[in-house]
Image (cartoon, rainbow, N blue to C red; front, side, top):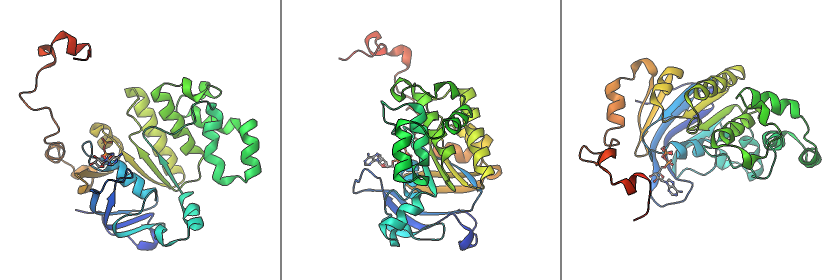
Length: 280
Ligand SMILES: Nc1ncnc2c1ncn2[C@@H]1O[C@H](COP(=O)(O)OP(=O)(O)OP(=O)(O)O)[C@@H](O)[C@H]1O
């Protein structure tokens, strides 16, 4: 049940039978036989239980590590056949927004967001921007789209988890990337911000005709926002279908065995000391 084959030259990604390890480098494969074709402007949600391989797939798409087997092409090229310098150039066309963005804690938000422009600047411009941000208005506009404009000059280590996450996504808006790879962008957000965040990401991807691949634990939001749903489990692609063809039975099967067992203690059965998180 793989995606419909599309003309190779037009694809942002072509994966055929890709095996890959997790970036952490264990010997076990985290992805097995993944076939996935993504065209410019396509928006797809990656769903699947914890440990399914969603993060590994996003890292593979970001060319963060080399697949073990299969065919992998980004923008019609095998990145791993390129010289390091060319691969670096190719990576500037991709943007990976990890679940926890690696933002320097003592930096101001404006500087952290503008860092997305580094690939577009020469060394001198980059150094000057560290002292005097080059285009704070652009950083403000990007933050404002995630309802975070007032944090422009806050320090990164004073942001809440959800604010840090949106700060990382504001960087994405300042990149020139044609492939937007977003890992669980809603994990620290309330429902209203979750809607705003998904809508903003999708509007941005549409505006630049970029591919958007977004992993989500919120299946209801994935189905509400995305036309194409790609499901992973145990490192394998379970289905890759238009939303209209995804049934509740498929979702239930995907998350089968992910529910607590029927005989698991109920919360009100637990001793009080466990309920307050005390160590035994
Ligand atoms: N740091 C790590 N080093 C080695 N293996 C890891 C590491 N983190 C996760 N793995 C393993 O790699 C496999 C895929 O994990 P991955 O993080 O890609 O899944 P995921 O679907 O993104 O999970 P989650 O929804 O919990 O974030 C799992 O078997 C997991 O145990």
